[in-house]
Image (cartoon, rainbow, N blue to C red; front, side):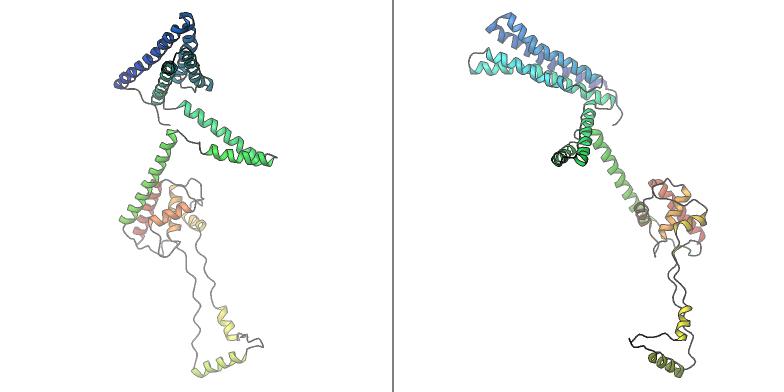
Length: 355
């Protein structure tokens, strides 16, 4: 998650002013509940009802506010109590009312304390996230989901009961939908990754467009050698000799109509050279005098040049920068975009100096 930031003076003033109506709403809810129940049951009963409803809710609200300001996740019992206690006070107030209208008003009045407590806790949580750079509640929820997902995946794969395995499999998919929900840091990280990919793609495209073509020196740069052609047969002395040889070959067919090579043909076949294998990366590295580059390993600047040279001349015509970088990534080699571009510039400079 991003680093925290200090609140400006204007932010402090606005946030402090936002707490005032929340406190006023909670206090008004408690006064209203006391007045409603006092008319039906007396002051003592009304005071006890307010203490059990709004008073207990205020205590839980202070606990929630304190934990939030300390950057800690609040227990589930605290969040549940913030709603159950005002609900109980609402039921008590509704039973003391006469008529439908009064019942609705009496039942809604204690909920002011609940809304005030939740509002103050939520605002305090956002202040902590802004100043500390971390959201304890989101981290707690994410950790709970990951633990449950790990348990159900293990049970889905190894439990002896087939029905339990099926239930855990379905539960795992439901939990997978909740991963990352409400995690602002995850969304920011994904956007950063996407921006980097778009930047790299645009950088490669522009480099391919504006890089001047260079004719490489085939003698200076090691390149794959194409398959050698067959040696040309020796010239015949005369057309009569060619006719005699053709008749001899035709007569030398066996019973299955398979042509049998003559002695002269066998001599010609033996003169054909075997295909020359392409130059490997190990050979290029050995000639350059650097260790053989390996995929998924950190490469030095010299090794990057060796890999790009090998990839560039692995095809005819040689690969462009964008094609070479694509082959570089597909082969599993690692290296930052700036280092790869620098190595490509070194390679181009070597080709220009050699030519």
